[in-house]
Image 1 (cartoon, chains in turn yellow, green):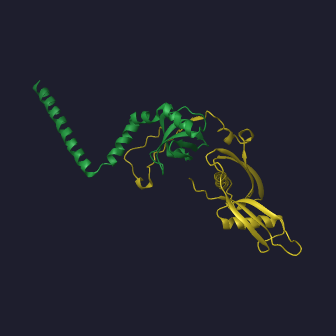
Image 2 (cartoon, rainbow over the protein chains, first blue to last red):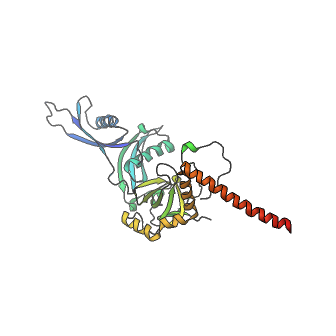
Image 3 (cartoon, each protein chain N blue to C red):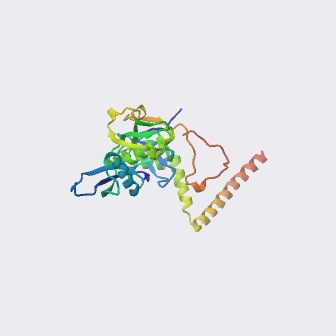
Length: 178
Length: 134
């Protein structure tokens, strides 16, 4: 229902076959990109760092989008990332609670941008995993592992139901009690 | 100080967006701002609390029930009737009716209002005369 900016793609590619190597090894990567073109480009970027192959002497075998298997189930996602700050590269592990992996990744990108001023092209996702509730490390995700969770909504902002009904001036002050 | 809590089983009204006006049940809490929300006639989805107005009605369910158990729990708690008899629910029904009037209905409404106004003024005049007499 929400449109996610980052999609998860499975990209499969290999070097072009040559006389020395008839059947080069096939490599598969799962990455996040906004569209397929960017996904393919990112694939070659990472593969160049790992093997001696470039887009010009390699071929793309498959690119498929990976969709969420259970988008109505809430999961705890752990994301390991490597990011470039103003002074150097750092590794980080972050946890998010979300229904889909794409949603969690998008949360990660926006949080890195807000908390550390890291733009999305300076972030490399090393690994993502769904973490069972027992193994979560961060208190901010663990506080929602409560089957009898209950909290009040403290500050109610009164919003017009559509942006068309928005007015600059209102006759009365709002009632903020829920 | 707080009477309406976000909890599993709380019935809420959607007050913004595509699902405006729908009664939904909070089925689980994702994080501080979002809840997993479900209703008998829609796919379970996530919603920001900013889009929800909590009501007084709660139903008795466990975390993320199956659709059948959710519908059964809603029947058991009689959400529909409770909502339609509550003052908030009645006001919404009246608003909907008023928005769906056609011109003939509005004409009939005008006549009814005039008639009611006339009766009130008659009674008021009678009371005034009584008061003026004594």
